[in-house]
Structures are given as structure tokens and as C-alpha cells.
Image (cartoon, rainbow over all chains, first blue to last red; front, side, top):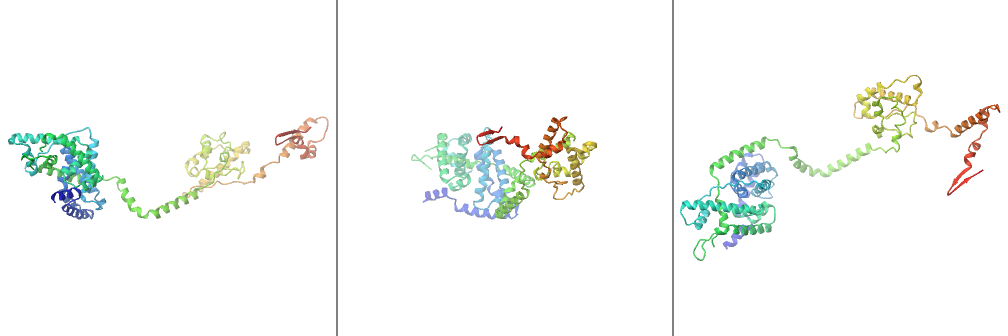
Amino acid sequence: MDAAKALGKTLVASPERRQEADADFEIVRRVQAGDVAAFDSLIRRYRERLFAVIYNLTANREDAADLTQDAFIKAFQSIHRFSGQSTFFTWLYRIGVNSTISHLRKNRLRSFFSLETLDADEPVARDVVAALTDTADGERDAFVRELQERLNAAMLKLSIKHRTVVTLFEIDGLSHQEIAEVTGCSVGTVRSRLHYAKQLLQAELQPYLRR
Amino acid sequence: MMNQKGQPTVSIEDLLRLKRAERPDAAFWTQFDQELRAKQLAALVEKRPWWTALPRKLRSLARHQLPLGATAVLAITLVSLRDYQPLVPARRQAVPAFDTSAQAPAPLAAMVAPDAVDTADTVAPSDVPERDSLVPLRAEFANSSEVARMVPTLPAAAGNDDERPSARSIAENRAVAEVMLGTANPGFETRAMPVRLNPREPLAQMSNPSEAHRSRFATAFAAAAIGTSPVPTARVARRLSDEQLYDTIHRFGASGNSVSFKF
């Protein structure tokens, strides 16, 4: 039963997200009516998630910050064009992802990587690190750093399209349908890209997997 | 998650979830908000180019596309009909009739050059006799100061020059230019029709070819009869009929594939 729920969640948006979308639409209506300050609440709600997506696509902190800000500026300038046919965050993600893809294509040869510090209090991160290491805290930090770099390198070996799908699904937790709306391709294409990208990542990160 | 040996398992999804835990600190978000605020203000102040608003304006006009399109088609049709003028077949022959290049200075020669002739203001050579036709002036020239500067520089016709056709046409053009410049009205319609002076029927100007032949024949006959006969050449010319004049021509005939000679 849980597996079926999880599968359904991967395919379509969750009810919580629909409620969020309704609330977003109300705020967008206020901004369109002239309440410019209401846009700040949208920024506060989505800045961290959008930054995380762009950061995992670019692997650069400064670029990610600039691109996230630009995405919000573009969304603010084009808010009158938003008609509510899609959810606001899907629309915002589309702006951010398209800007990031353009940026990556322009700066294909330039690569400055920067890593954020891993939040050790995150439950998932704590469990994964505990499962992978049984050493002292000092060595564990070095191991986590190395794992971050290997993860980063493996992600950057993926093409931009595959990296986008993996980032939106595995890191941000969007459904296949939402990813299809953001990337502008079909759900089948999303699943295909996701499967191919995971195969490549598995091959790259084989030493860190425990079965 | 544990495997069959009781050891924790780590999948690729677990490793990727580690990326979720990579988060910037609070100071980063403070700076982020400040930069975003500055960019927002700059975007508000910055004047966007006009073409960014074009799609929105076109979309607002889309609901009126049928009446707007019909109006545009009607306007284009009206303008086309208004400016339509059939091409004159031999318009280039209208201007070379004036030999102004010999007397007029260079600016006038350039003004009456065939390329400068506006078709709408040109009078066909078949409509107006050659010696009475006018140099077609373009309305732009007629209203501009250029013509006013050029026209007084024309050489003044004097003595025997008045009788030459080129001198007459220059004088007529000068009169037309003075009339047009004197009554120039800077209103909506700037074009002026060329004024015809002393229009004459084309047939009235043509001379009878038999007359010319008769006089030529009489002259030749008089030259041949000097000292032998005192008959005046005028009487000889009167006695010659058209039949006799063209008799020599009638001796040669051509019809179909055959040529005939009469002796």
C-alpha cells in the first residue's frame, strides 16, 4: 500500500502541493493587482528550493545565487503573463532551469566548483554517513568531504538534461508530471532520462554503495 | 535499511539525498536578500526596450484583427488607385526634343534629364506638339528653392536666338516655372500640372509630303531648264499632278514573294 502511494506521488503532484499552488495563485493575483510587496512572500517560500536546484545543476555557489536572483527578477517582470494554467512554482522553476541551462551552455568551458557544507543534523544525511563510515569524527569529516566531491563529479558527468531530471526528482522531490511541465518534455522522456542517469551514477559511485 | 547480513544498505537514491543536506548558512541568505532587493529596484528603474511590450500590444489588437485588416486593405487599394497612372510608351522621347544642353547650364540639363521626369506629370508626345510641349517639371523642383536659383541663370534669349525651338522652349519653361513658383501653395497637394501654351492639333503641324516633293521637283526642273525655256517654275509645279509625281515610285512593286519592275 505504501509502495503504491509512493509510486503515485512520483507520478502526480501531492495534495499538499496542490494546496500550496492555490495559495501561490492567490498571492500572484495580489501582485498582478498591484501589491508588489506580496511578491516577497513568494521569494521567501521558494528561494531555498530554487537555489538548491540551480546549485546542483551548476555546482557553483555564486553562479547559483546569481541565477536564482535573476529567475525571481524575470518572474517579477513577467508576472502579468502568468495566467494560472500551471502552478506558480512550476512556472518559476521553468524560468530558473531554462536560465541555468542557457548559462551552462554559454560557459561550457568554464568550471569553478564550490561545495556547500553538509548539514550533519539532516536525518537522511546522518543515516547515510553513519552507514558508510564506522570511524572517528575527524576521519568522518574527511570521508564526507570526499563523498561530496565524488557526488559532485558524478553529477557533472551527466548531460545537462539528465542532470536536470535527476536534480528535480531525487533532490527536490518533484513528480514526473511536474518535471515534465518544468522541462517541457513528456513524462515518458522524463522516466527514460531518469533511468539512464541513475545507471550512469551507479557506475560512477559504485564504491560507496552498500547492498 | 538493512541487508540480509544485517548491514545497512546505501543506494544511489540515498547518496543523492545527501545533496539535499548541502545548504548555505544564514549569512548567505542575508546577502542574497540584499542583492535581490537591489536587482529588483534596478529592474524597476531600468527602462525596458519598446519591443518587449510589443507582443502584449499586438495581443490586445488581436481581437480587432478583422476590421483592422479590412481597413488596411481598403486604404492600400485607395492609395493604389489614386496614384495609378498608365505608363506612357514613349515617355523618353518627350524630353530629348529640347536641345537645352547646348545653351542651358549644367543644372538645367540635369533637371530635364529623362531620369528626372516624373511619369505622373509627363505629357505624352502624341498629345502635345513637340515645339509647344513643356519640360516636365517635378513638383519638388517647382516648389524648391533650387529651381528658383537655377531658372534665373538661364541665358537671356536675344536676337535670332528667339526663333530657335530650343530658345522658345526655354522661354516657355521659364514662364511656367515663374507661374508655378509665384502661385506655389504649400498645402496638401504639392504637385502641379504643367501648363500648356498654345495647344495645336498635331495634324495641323504636318505638311503634305506631295507639296514637298512638288517643290523639290520644280526646283530641279528649273535648274535643268535654265537658258532653254523661260517657263516659270511655279507654273511647272502647278501642272504636275500627284499621279505624275509618284509615277516613278509606282514602277517598283513588291507583293508577297515577288518584286516587279515596270519599264
